[in-house]
Amino acid sequence: MRIAIVSVLLAASAALTAGIVLAFDLFRPHRDTVPLLLGTVLLWLLFAAALVVLRRVRGRAVVVLVLAGSVLIGGAAMVGPPNTSTDSARYAWDGIVQNAGVSPYAYVPADDRLDELRPDWLFPAPVSGDGGPDCVGERIETVDRGAGLPLCSALNRTTVPTIYPPAAEIYFAAVRAVVGADAGYWPLQLTGLLLSVGITGMLLVGMRRRGIDQRYAAVWAWCPLVATEGVTNSHVDLLGVAFVVAAAFWVSSAKYVRGGILLGMAIGVKLIPAIAAPAMLKRQGWKVVVATIVTFALLYLPYVLATGIGVLGYLPGYLTEEGYEDGSRFALVSLIAPGGSAIVVAAILLAGLAALTIWKTDPERPWFGQLVMIGGTLLVLSPRYPWYALLLLPFIALSGRWEWLAIPLALTLRLLVPTLTVSRVSLGIALVLIVVVSVRRAGPGALNRWRGALTRIPAALRNGQRT
Image (cartoon, rainbow, N blue to C red):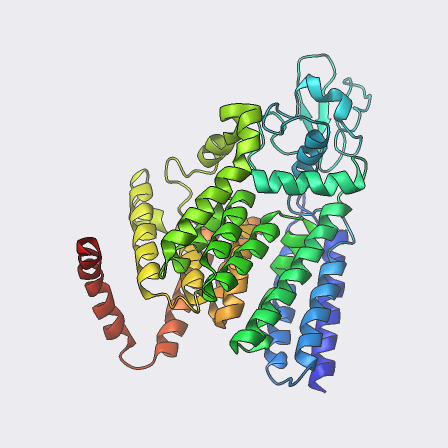
């Protein structure tokens, strides 16, 4: 009966996922986001219900259900094009450009020197109208190149260089080398599905070998965020997550150089996986650091030789655009430190969190430290894009701390209702929930023990400097 109930809940999640992808998106003019918001909330409720019922399932059925749910829900997320992000269009273009022998950092997509490379599904022809040629389509933006005809583009930020690091660019090129330039969104959705299921399998194997309850792998496998942002919208974060999880397993097995290599590859996909590093530095951390830096440098080397300083792409402009330069992005921190002072407070919080993570993490089980470091960073930085929380999900699974799911849910709400008030309220609720549940887990006297631990940090740092 329990297996049947879980199966029904997973089938309902898959059906609802497919329905949302086909019926709703954020690109329609005068869009009504209420149905998309309600559908997303219902998806999370089905997810929570399935996790609760799975707790009473025993034996091999757990592994079968976890894997089947990962494939079923992920497959359902492929039924339509991206519905909340156009990033995968840029991924495809970067791959097409590279396979033509051009560095993705060399030219902006609107550059007329790349005209011969443009596939119609990414750059449709303008449509003639009463006011002259115009760009038509939900995902299509108009770019004025001053040549008489507008450039119609499915990419966002068509007039700026790419932002993605080299490992991501290699991935984009590899996918396009297999399917060609004319394939649409589905190739990256398929690789997203394969990565999602692969990470599920990695978690199941790693949990079994380390005596962790395999039911927790469902936190990753069935999470709506993985299906919608990892598969439907094909965010490259999934590749970084795969490398980070593998790195954590290697480091926990005292394979520090291998772990560092994989961490360097993860950072080479997207820079944010660097926040997973502190929890892997407790024992022989120098090996991890050296291997990470060398790997990251080697990934960048061919692009630096081809493009020079241009490999920085649009990263500086992106950080300014997102509000990190003036502190306006820090939803919770800005409540106590408005304006530019939020940057200083955020830096102090993150540095303290990193020091605490290095000091307290069990090197044989680094996932709880990674959970705290990654989750704490998301609370401090409060990004407006929920796919950044994909990096957090495997460590929620490995540590069994379900309350941290409040962070990806809060960031998802922030995307669908893009206001500062919603961001502050949802992240504030997430923070309170995490603290309350963590105190209850720790038992009586927890606050006194934590207060004593915090007061010992300065002394521990001084002793470390002396030695």
